[in-house]
Image (cartoon, rainbow, N blue to C red):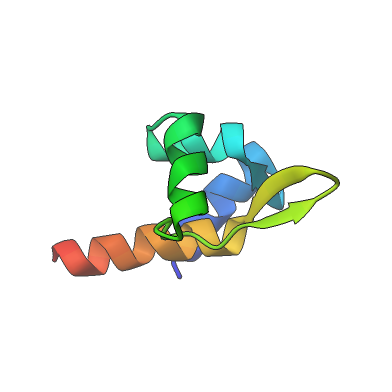
Length: 72
């Protein structure tokens, strides 16, 4: 995982992202992410806490790092 990506995301969003924040970071809609989560095709691990869906910043940063490796 890129520490720079992790630091940037942590500074802007905190230790975890809700579905709205995740949609903003990925440039997609909240509904698309919700559908992908329900179908089991969302590439980023999520969890429910307090009735809300969250993604850990570490998992989001790792997703971007893996996507960059795959593109190279």
